Amino acid sequence: MNASVRTVLLLTVVGFLGMGFDAVSAFAKTTFPPSTPSSTSTRSTPQKIVEMYQLAPLSASTEKRDGLPNVAPQTDWPSPVEDEKKHIFILADVLEYRPNMGGSESGNDYRWDIEGWYGGDYNRLWFKTEGQQNSAFKADYDADSQLLYGRFFQQYYDFQVGGRLETQSYRDHNVTRGLVVIGLQGLVPYNYEIESALFVSCLGHVSARLTTTKDLSLSQRLILQLRLETNAAIQRVKKFTTGSGLNNVEGGARLRYEIRREFAPYVGVSLDRSFGETATFVRKEGGDSSQIRFVVGVRVWF
Image 1 (cartoon, helix red, strand yellow):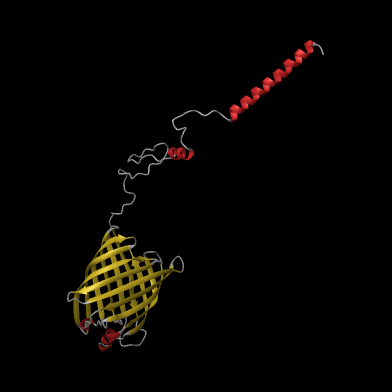
Image 2 (cartoon, rainbow, N blue to C red; image 1 turned 45 degrees about the horizontal axis):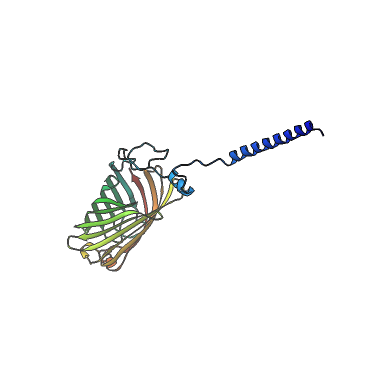
């Protein structure tokens, strides 16, 4: 091999080596770029992430900051719910006729249980009235009316306080008394509606009442309502046929058909029984202390 050929081969080898170094250098720069000096270069990666997603200070402005939502309370926004708007509501839950099917001396009679209120979600003025004739609790005719102030104090519950006027008639004479009412009304778990009240008469006689109802939907329009009511007293008040202790328990089942939600006729059965001294008083006045009644009525609200 002569000198010129060796020179050409040497230059060719040097050229290939130079091209290989340039390729390796370019690959290294692309894969491992040099770090840029900065003021946060000495901080750890988790700390950087925290600083990156740190929430902006809350303010009353509706503007967003750094793309993050502003969750601060907005003082200039209107209330989403008009919970102070006044409404009126009246419910005749029991409005029924009870034919005499037992052959007793007493004739057909009736019963009502109506309540209503006016106000908003927090403050309401309640009106309640109920009455019946010839029950196991009262021998002849019994009616009472209540006017109450109701205050919402917890979800589903109203605290109520006010007055009650109770009237009874028997053998053409009437007795009436006034009582102070302290009550609680609301919806307990499993959709049981409860209505409890403590009564204190002007003479210091204390009594109580508990009513609970439960609606069972058999179809979209057919509803079976279960109802239980009981009364108790601490003192004996013979004038009002009330003994001390448990006075009576009444249970009923009413099947209603809702032609409209506001109007539903029903049929049902009611079992009423008084106990102890109360039963004795009722029998002395000619009443029946244990009764089973078939009822027909209508449930209305608006």
